[in-house]
Image 1 (tube, rainbow, N blue to C red):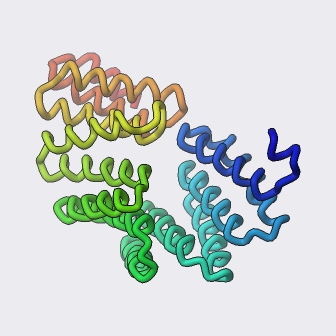
Image 2: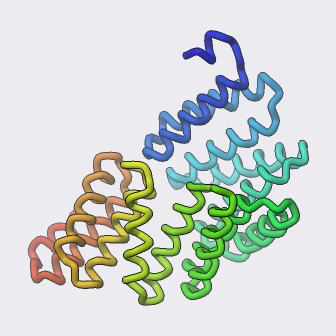
Length: 277
């Protein structure tokens, strides 16, 4: 491309980073990893410590998406060291949020909460609304995972407001996806339907958030007795997950479709999906 021709390492790394984020959103993990690794190499050559920290954090996201949690933590800890070396609190806040996410997946809930409390304190000190939104969204997920959906609703709503204040579109989507989950957990399917429909329609076509919104919306519509619409959303999520090789989402969508089939009395179809799952 043009950046390669003009020899601008920083600009070339930025292009690679954006391409990597695009592939990550499409769940094309191998290609995303290649792009992030090349961006990190260029930033290392250019002495861009902040950029290198961002690339390390992206590589951690790829590792986490593969379920390689220890590798993700190693990338994150290196990113945190880079951020601390240059005194970049914004990157440091983001890294702590991601470290908390990995600890939550490993059921290290106390450590996850410690990291999030630090991230929230740092974001408040810097008046970083985007960082606060990330931390609050992650905290909402943690509260959901530990059986506190009512508290999670409040955190997701606060995260959404912070993201809106920062004009942080991706943060709004992340907060609303979590809010939809939490509203379902507290028994408010109508509220969840409104939020999840908005996420489905606002996220990029084929992106992970859109597919997850479709899957959750299918379950929500089933709860509301809107079976035809529920099947359409579930089928769409299942087909896209299978096409993109998202095994976890495909498994969840299969189970959702089996539950829907059982509600409709289609027991053979339900059994087929459960055996496949």
